[in-house]
Structures are given as C-alpha cells and as structure tokens.
Amino acid sequence: MPESPDVTGTITGITGWHESPAVRQAFEVGWRAGFIGDAPLDDQIAHALGFAAAVDDVGEGRPAVVVDLGSGGGLPALVLIEWWSTTRFVLVEAQERRAERLQSVVDTTGTGGRVTVVHERAEVVGHERAWRGACDVVTARSFGKPAVTAECAAPFLRVGGLLVVSEPPTDVDRRRWPVAGCAELGLEPLRAVRVDDRFGYQVLIQRTTCTERFARRTGVPAKRPLF
Image (cartoon, rainbow, N blue to C red):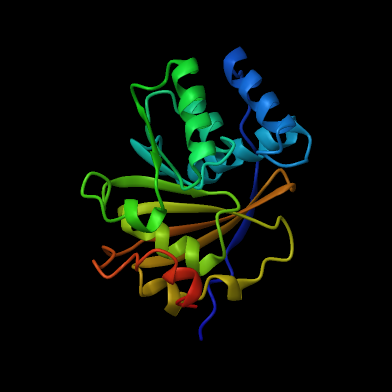
C-alpha cells in the first residue's frame, strides 16, 4: 500500500495567548481529576495551541466551523475556542460524565452561543445533516488509531477542509496515513508538522466529498479498520 508523502516541517507555535480565569480553573479541575493527562498543564495548553499553528501553517485562515472529536477534558477544544474567538465549535464526546462537564464549562465561560456539546458517538454525529460536509477543520487529540480517526472525521469536512491529528513529535511513520486508505474517505495526507520541536501533528485535506457509506455503524471503524 502506498505511503503518505514525505512532507514534514517545523514551525513556531502560537504566541500572545491569554486564557480566561474560568478556562484556567476548568483546566486545573480537569487536570486534578485525571481528565486531561499527567503532563504539566502549561505544556498541555501549548500542545493545544499547536493545532491552531498547524492550521495557520497551511494558510487556510481562521476556520468558521470546527469539530473536536472526543473532547474529553476540554483539550484542545477549550483553548481553541478562546483562540478562534468567532469560530463555531462542535464538541463530540461519547462519555456522558465528560460531556456534562464540558457543557458546564462552556456555560461558565459564556461561549455557549457558538459552542455545541454533543453527547454521542462520532460515527453517529457524522451523519447528521447539520454538520455533514459543513466543517472547515476537525481536530483529534488521542481519539483513536489513524484509520478510526480518519473515518470519523471525514464525514464532517467540506471539500478543502482540514483534519489535524496529534502525533508523536519525532520519528514520523508515514505508514500510519496511507494514501490509498485515506483516499477511500476523500482524504489526502498533506503535511506532518512539528511545532517548536516539541509537538507533532498530521494534517490531512479533504480532497473529495466523503461518501454516505462513512462513517460505518458504531464500533465498526475500530473492529474493521480501512487501513
């Protein structure tokens, strides 16, 4: 199976970030509860901003609609919501407790007018007409294996939209995003990006509209991955 193009680059991260007290408090609570990992909180916030840097690197400008898959404890979503202050967001989270907490944070920060929290599996939400083929960017941090992430993300993206996935910062394995497998979903691996030599991301572009076949039924992308 053909590998993805060997296109990599190192870019500079976002500067000038000033988070609101409400978001900082939400992150600290989530960090103590184990919702957002064990790494230092400031490092995790810098990693979240790397998603925006990766989008900027491709030159698409500020997205109008962003979907975050498996929003969990709120990273990168809550950071990106503040950074892209006019962008609409859809936060997809399958676990009820985490979805409820996300909704509480969104209500507290006053961003609810442009943020929708959806407690549902991504395979299901991707078939909803309100979001299908209508989004500029999909982000994924620790959502799943490449084939699962790609299949759940592609239905949301308009042609020309971007999927940005957190990846290991070094030793890029091009076999993770095979051209043929991604093409079945209308996706094409575009660029592997390292931000500040600390964080890694894979950027894919939606070249053609994802067919109605995808995403398959709940759980099928993981049980029978496309690649």
